[in-house]
Image (cartoon, rainbow, N blue to C red; front, side, top):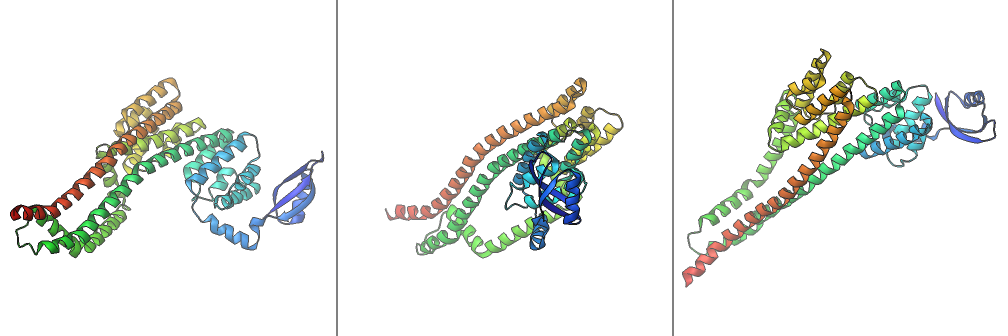
Length: 406
């Protein structure tokens, strides 16, 4: 089966363009005539020809960025809500991406749709671009006949997730860069500056201050074992990352993170907001609460929280209210439990989850802002103290020598 781009004229004389799936160009003309269209031009879609097809296959194997996924979802939502045929919406959206692999992915999805596949099934052929959660929500929209609203909900959720990613990036990049620069400054002082000054101290013939001896000892240790220590640290970090591939080790680590003051709260709130936002979108698209809970569970990045939701899902399956099941997990913030309970009483759990997500995202933003405003000056103060100690260690023997001279 090939895909052919065509230009044709309908019964009113209006020119139309599009694509059609057929075995040959003659079959494509027959299909167009069956649609009461008069073919003007038919040619094999460029994506399917020779070298371009191979290039497309290479691009299909590449991971799609979150930004491109968000843009594509928003564009598709607008077109589908405007009653644009799905295959045409896919083509229009694909043309918006020139160098991104999203272009080839959308064109391939369009071909599958033209061949008779549902949009959700066609999207599942590209797991690197569209997650199981994404395709499940699209499938629920197709089943309920609300694909446009579901795509709009997906776009809103992806935009919210992208906003959170930017906040996390802003909250972590600058302190990390500042910390690395501070460490480099200290290492350069200890390895390059201190040894040259120490060489001058040897001519004094005086007993050196304790601080100076400590700095000299640390400098000698860094010169002798600094590279070995750095290699051991890198090797340890690599070994730790490999150990996290084991489920038991990962559960212990994720549990430890949740117990860290402040950081644990941030991780819990961020994961809960992601879970609440997803389950809200699923329920709004008509997905049953139990299935929505199981699907949204996979958005949690913390294994302890993911297992807690899995256990809560089993309790809900047995007839327990969702709020009570989540409360027994002892993982989620009390506010979320209370809002879900209120939603159950009022018959609108989905909107309560959405409000919970809005609140938690706001709390995350304010907390990270405060944390960042405190962390930056703290790093600068610590760096200043370390540099001051090194300078003091250098100048103390000189000041003592001057004092003895008088």
